[in-house]
Length: 126
Image (cartoon, rainbow, N blue to C red; front, side, top):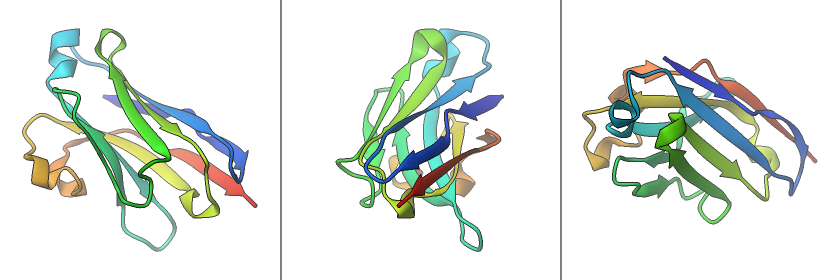
């Protein structure tokens, strides 16, 4: 089970940190999961934002490179998405997702993940 939180209302140029907390059997088990962040705006498909794997390799959509940073704390079964220099186009509901068996080339596909959090709203005002 995943729970995403940390969203809110922020002005352009501001920052937010999203958290994705997982309920798994152990730290070792959590570390075996690829964790991805996606976002969705009304009328659009879910869009890949970022992912981190068990080796802590990180991946970003071009639209957020240099502004967002993903990290994981396996001891807390939590993945973070630090979002800086936020823009109005970052406004969306953000979801975290997890799965174990995903090849790198599929990290950006929502269908690759079987476990999803409930989403947290991020609104960037201009």
